[in-house]
Length: 172
Image 1 (tube, rainbow, N blue to C red):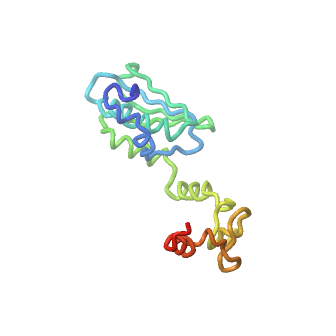
Image 2 (image 1 turned 90 degrees about the horizontal axis):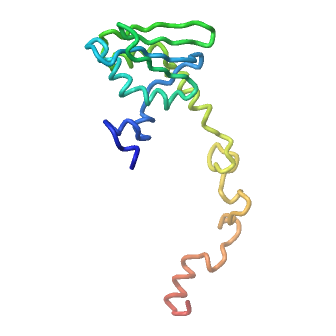
Image 3 (image 1 turned 90 degrees about the vertical axis):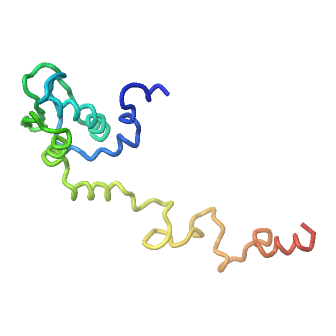
């Protein structure tokens, strides 16, 4: 498989990409991270980009994500919002987990908002749903389905007892 080539190909599997924790706020437009490819104090930013940037891009497709390499003496993240404001986050000397936790705390949606959005996405009025608290109580109320055996008896060829009896007698 061509996508499984390179260093740490696990980063591009669907399971890994969906495991991302950070969903950015709706007001965030551009997420820009600046770091150098050399230097000990840039190590956390490099590893953050290597491990977590694919997840951020997958989970936040409406946000433009930029990486600027070898342009700055110290690593930092710049965020641009839709109300023409910007935010600088200093990541100098931080570990990749600390950067992720800070980004989640500052730029991520709160847990309550995520739960409310997930509940709103879940459709309750799907006509295929039936049972308790749904539009139809039983599958027999859906057009094209066999009615309940309590209301209308099943045809003989659909009854298990009838088929077994016929096999035992040898007529089937």
